[in-house]
Image 1 (cartoon, one colour):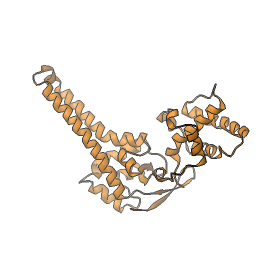
Image 2 (cartoon, helix red, strand yellow; image 1 turned 90 degrees about the horizontal axis):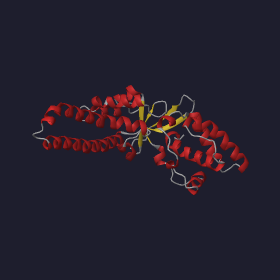
Image 3 (cartoon, helix red, strand yellow; image 1 turned 180 degrees about the vertical axis):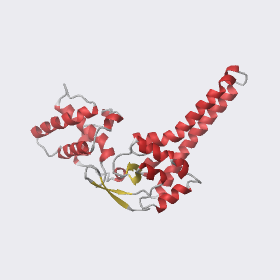
Image 4 (cartoon, rainbow, N blue to C red; image 1 turned 45 degrees about the vertical axis):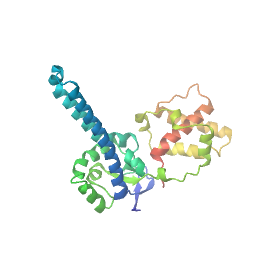
Length: 266
């Protein structure tokens, strides 16, 4: 397995280290994703065949068959291209195959992939996949940053997801979160609100969480209120009529949401 690392300095002047994903892990992830898409396409074909045989003598069906075929084609294109674009954008640069292989797509500046970047890199799959993904494999093999054509035009790289490889030993704050029975499901955060969080906000939340167990009660309550006043409005959350305990729990849950997106191995 290729262990080549790449150093990135973000626009916020923070240095990050990533391990570039090699051909093997990317190829297996692609195979898994295409196996899923193959199943979806077969289901779509079966639906089309069933519709054809369900109304053999129906004049309505024959009059509407052009629209039905067009609809099936639109669904086919949406499944085969929307699968990669939508999952990568809303799932932190991962598809099901990438998730299984522990890799993700990010911007070349270290930030999360944007919708436009995901759209561009996946539209170029048409070229990268020719023939039998040979163009993409050759590009990844010879490019110093292991980029295929889609990555070049979209300004993206594929890296190993360090959060998936992180040591499973629980930290003090993780034990605290578990003791309180908190999970990401405690608060539903909309994707567009999460996108409003920047590196400065993440550093604030992370600092708060890491100092959480070290502060005495008075200082912790004061810090909780200060951080909540900054972060809550960006996530569309209300502070009014909430106890300090509720504010603490909400900030800890927010940390869980942001951690997967922002916490890289430095």
